[in-house]
Length: 59
Ligand code: F3S
Image (cartoon, rainbow, N blue to C red; front, side, top):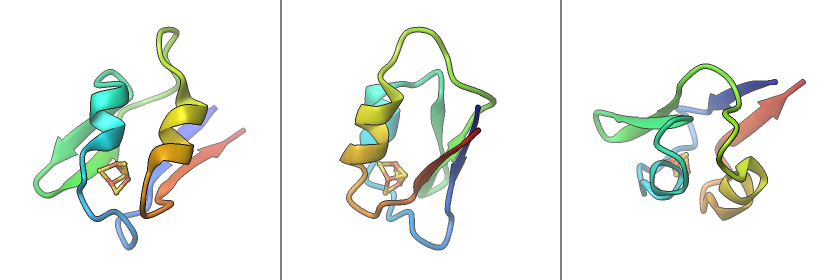
């Protein structure tokens, strides 16, 4: 799976980073997805929690 954060949509709330800092990191005032899915977080929760609906998971 490939994770991505849509820079057009991300408002930099940081929720995704607080859910998993192995999958997401802040990059300036937006988040970026780092690599692929990790084993110890709930990505579905991250996707659903993002207020800007900016996180995408592609198979
Ligand atoms: Fe951005 Fe959504 Fe994360 S707004 S900082 S991708 S929770």
